[in-house]
Image (tube, rainbow, N blue to C red):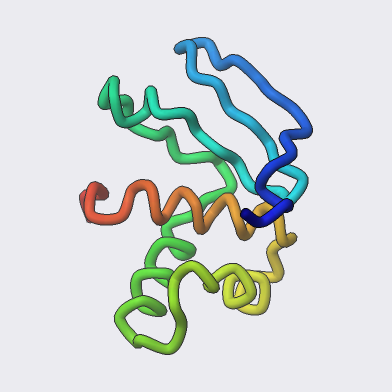
Length: 100
């Protein structure tokens, strides 16, 4: 198992009772309550519609595997790596559930 995903650097309890862990790799891990409780993931303020459209178009182009899309967000929008990862995570978690 990849050591980058083993160590958790911080843990927060959200008002709705969901635990969120921040890994040293800079990503967020949402616990299984999101799926189990059917709770919708709120869109962070920094996630813009243009990010989601860009990721949709990147996926449709077939240029990149979407698990490797973070560098494309960094290049296109000048996002920091952690922010780009969180934008990508939001896109993945909500893919097919968003109403356009």
